[in-house]
Image (tube, rainbow, N blue to C red):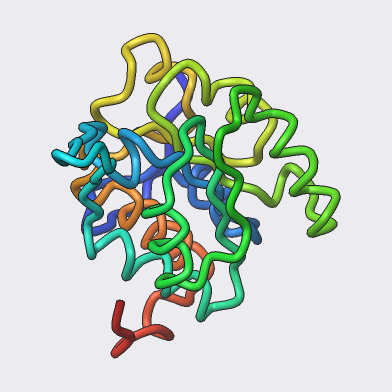
Length: 187
């Protein structure tokens, strides 16, 4: 019987193999609906689309960027409010309206000259799997589609839109000994 070595974190024990993958990450790619938001879409009387974003996720993203780790968004939907959120956080790589996320992913890799093994992706549904299958560290939020959960390298303890992105950001920073570097940032 093989024993799995784990590392204790504030999110519970994490397999050493996951921490080794996280230590290599130079780029985190996030889905939006169900990951950075809770997956609900609110529509105002004028037809405008509204979403809620968790400030903990925003803080984690800012910490990654401050630590020299790129962050990108690839999402199937398109919304002006997401451009605003990305700008607020300092995310310059935003791909919206992507029915084939793999194409956007490959374009991003070429643009940034990043190796797939140096990329983490966090998603929540089957549309995310083609990209997740190619990256060095694939993560699914706790409330992801049941068919996606067993395929992910890492499943967050926290649900989408509730701080799951922050959890993954913390894991990456911890694996790279950079968790203390970003104290005092604001979002």
